[in-house]
Image 1 (cartoon, rainbow, N blue to C red):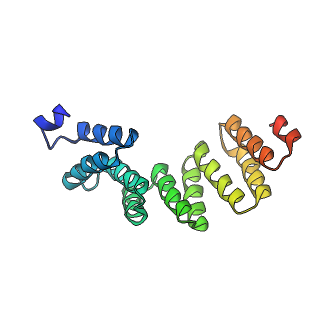
Image 2: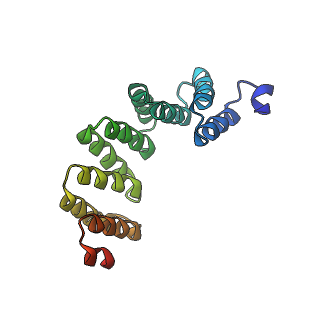
Image 3: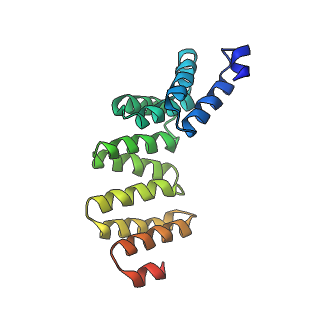
Length: 169
């Protein structure tokens, strides 16, 4: 905090503060810090993501979505903004849109098990455990994190009460 008092236009410590405040659940202070950064650097991708996450936590879905899309436009190869955009769509129960976002994140980084997990959750919420298992099985060939995929497959099998398969995975 002292660094930002000495030099209010120096954003790295302000960004760390915003992330710290967000991590501790203080979305108001996180927003104050990220908004100050964005006033000086409207193209600061990390500040956009922090601000979007804070707005999402506050239930401001439209504002969060706009911030995540701005971050995505600035860095289209960063899977984080696709993950965050997908999270907004899930909360809005727009599963087709969320699926596109998570699939794109997974395409950018096949080892991003969080994206695969989100896609599996969508399949399960829509009542299609078989599709979830097929999705996970198909992804085994695309990732280095096969242990993570097998863990997801085990969780799917537990959910469908196929205990023999769950133990196998």
